Length: 376
Image (tube, rainbow, N blue to C red; front, side):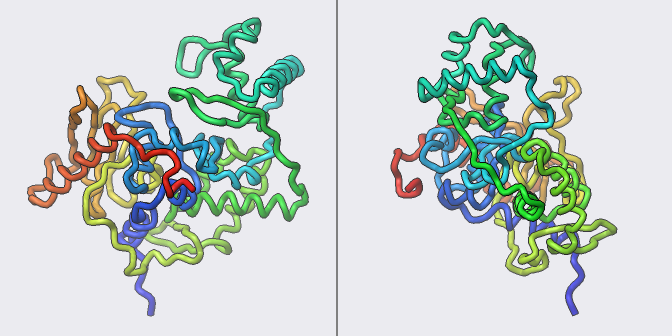
């Protein structure tokens, strides 16, 4: 008789399957399938914090430095981030929910001709050439060249791709996507592959979280919204599942959450707010019994955890959070604990010191030289 599945099983499964043994950068991105990006650097960008926990000898900025050689693309999925290049055939040609008007289309065609003529185009160059486009409100306040906003939209529409970044700024080249088989069966197959990628990245998933993530998939694949909903409706026939404490959970069909192989790393990890282990706040609270909050956009007087609190995972327990910052090359940290204080176990202190030392190297070290074996 099979052992009944418990939240303990699901917790171990969630940690062990996502925080796998560190590997090369290309292999880690392929295994994840998607790495969420965020421009905020506190103490490092989200994509770097995520990969730091999964890539051998990773240093902040390695993804950006090596991007052109890795066979990756920046694109929209459930959020904006990095995907293996072969995923583009599932996401494009993309039909945005809001079509351009004729004036915007003409402007985009003119910018596309400019980019094609140059081969590569920096937003600054486009802004100078198309200054007559004027300025528009920025995403986070202030304003910016309308052409810069248009470049973002052209990238989303599939007219451009990010060739590389220069000091964090996207440099574009022209892009086109092959037409796809638009038959109902082919559309459903693409939708299934996209939902499979969600489940593979974030499982085990409570049913409401799976539904929410597929709703977010309308960002990356709005043209497959009907088909992705159908995949969710048929989730019980496609994915492994069980009801635990009244909630249905899903995971890839070839995995067993109750397997004894799921043994979390015994050390301590400080995770990104957007790390796959911590991303789903609903699941986080169900597995660890407390509500983690990302408060970077909360006014300082109202914050309870800090500007950019990193969940603190020790073994299989989320004990609290840490805020890190570099000051003149020295890593400073502030800790918070759900229990109100740190564990008294000396092993915890040693594990914390080891993780802070790793973070210092991650933030201040240098990436491997270009052309290293892991990139080939």
